[in-house]
Amino acid sequence: MLLARSRHASVRSLERYARPGVDAVARHVAERDPATRRRR
Image (cartoon, rainbow, N blue to C red; front, side):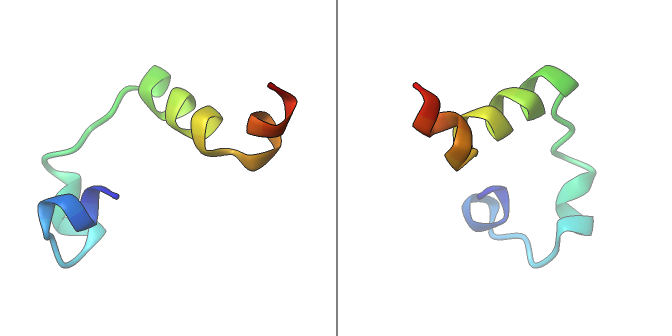
């Protein structure tokens, strides 16, 4: 998603700008995980 929004060609070039915290990554994974969404 970040690659599409920022129009960076690779994750490596985007890496220096986007440094999400552990909590943000966990929240993103939980929101996008199909198994988690089914349990709600």
